Every structure is written in structure tokens, then in C-alpha cells.
Length: 166
Image (cartoon, rainbow, N blue to C red):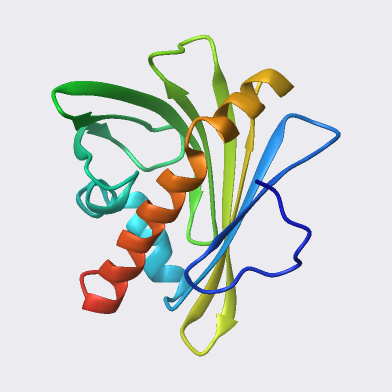
């Protein structure tokens, strides 16, 4: 689940668990501009189209992607709801800082930071990190299908970008 590779390749997400703090780092390259990735992460209609693993239907209940704003969405599969919520602490074109809570585990709140590295020629490296409350929580995230959800979600995002939807 972690890699010692120093770069991500297009189409794959590198997920690393920090050995010193309960932190997960993600890195993925996209054939997209930083502006396109920022829009895909802050426009609720776009976000709902790509977030999470295949087979989920996501409904945005609240979305205010501004400094101090908040968000909440429901992802459904086979009649089962998975609810998520958080607050946007900082939203700017090169960086997003937010909290993330799965309402099924309301005592576990992650602090997430995402930034977009312009690689030139219409390519961007997305960096993200999630700081959780314990090593146990971090490891549960990693064992709970995180890689699949991220890979499938980002594949949908890449397809939206290549189709011109973003």
C-alpha cells in the first residue's frame, strides 16, 4: 500500500503511509491543468460525477467551496447510504485545506491538504495528504478499500478532463 517511488505515473495513484505520524500521502499525475483539477475539486456538480469508487451515486447536499465554507454529500450503492461532511479551511487555486468526516465514524476527523503542481504541457501532479487521529485509523483507511476508491475515482476524473467536461 505504500511505495518508495519518487514520482507518480499517469493513471496510477501512489499512496504512502508516513511511519512517524498518522498521515497518508497521495500523488497522481493528470493530463490536466491545475485550473481543471481545482475546478473538479470545488465545483459540486463535477465533484459528484467522479468522486469515489465505481458504482456509487453521489448526491451533494451542501457545498460551499470557500474559505470557512462547509460541505456534505451522500454516496449510495445498492440502497445503502454513506454520508460524508467537512469544512473548507482554505480554498485557493493552488491549494485546498479541508476536514473530512465519514459520518459512520463521527469521532474520526481528518485534516486534508491538497495542492496542484504544474508540470507544464497541460500536465499536473496532484499531491494530497490526510492527517488522521491515530495510526489505527490510518491503517483502517488503508485496509478499507482506499486504493480502489481513489484509483477508480481519479480514473473517472481523468476521463471527464479528456472528454472536455472539465
